[in-house]
Image (cartoon, rainbow over all chains, first blue to last red):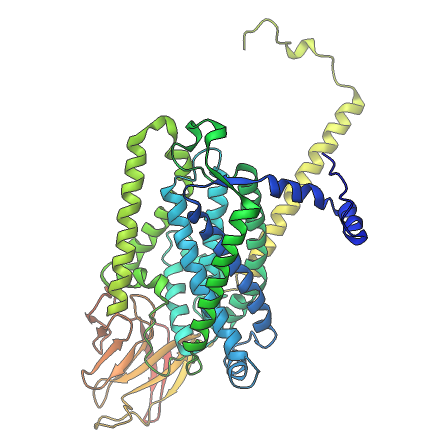
Length: 354
Length: 163
């Protein structure tokens, strides 16, 4: 389909459109419509994407001042906070956007799970989202080590210890992640490399696939939507309605991030010492607290094994909960998901109030 | 298998010498490719996974002359040191006896500390405690702390090694 040239458009616009195929992209975007009921749910994916972009920008800025070596890392962060203009703000924005990103990603997962968005033909969309979720966890884990203060090291030790509890391959995984049997300065170098090079690259690939698949299959329609005749389906324009509203969501998120960064700047503790000079509780960020609380009463091996089983179950969910199997499996999956979500919420709150 | 339409191998024309040579070449290339990828994978794995504690010293000398038995406000009942990259600790159990441990909690790998009030090694993460033989006495840990052997001792130093 060739786009008709717009006589009113300026010469540069025509020149660019003819060389980039922009008109076809614009036409496809303009023709795009999404179901009106339940539209709010789709802001979660959009918000996650926006926060990821914010992480890229603030992360690139931080990388200009951060030195990824155990001897210099802590001091370089200290210098960033005390000497670099707006250093504290940029670091705190990166910190708080990571929290908001994890929150939006978690809600996005819950929303797509409840909407059964993994149903055919969107299995691969779900699987690419699953991969991106795993990458987000790896981002959070590697990023928390980088300030190299004593709390970062303590959390890094616990996390690495948990990786070591993975059945069969735990020891090899620890050597892969920590560059040895335990966390040392070499681990920091690896975490920094993963955080700024490997994980962004993989995320870019995974995100490309995810967004392409969303483009190909569209968003999951609400229940009963497709049984209506096509002309009667309530829907809104993606460009004219959804994008402006999601821009509002982004403005709200950006304001929240700025407020949090200004009023609750990210902390920086005393430098890490491998020998462990002072007693430090390795309490993780709120999104890992439910694990930490669970580990208070359950030994690490079963907890890690259960997490792996649950992760695998989420991965193969599209192939198990399928239409021919009927409503029983769907109820089972939903019930189990609700129970798990309740547990995570209760354990997190329990951890927060302790 | 017994379909009448399927041609038996004998019915196919014998491959020419050129075809045979090309097939042998394909097989050779495939084999070589697999070999190269395999060798590369082994090399990359070795590159990525460092050898376990190769150059680290087996025996570490720790100064204990400052270890006190009389209530010292600075808590000098224990000396911390690094053993092969891991936090380790020497504690004085009696006037004559010291013991050394890897100071890593057997529950979640947090670093344990000597607490002079309870005379125990405590973990700040889930409030676990070990007695001075390394046995877990409170909290989630099931396993005792890893003991390090005292291979030699004088008034000023102990020499510590893996058991």
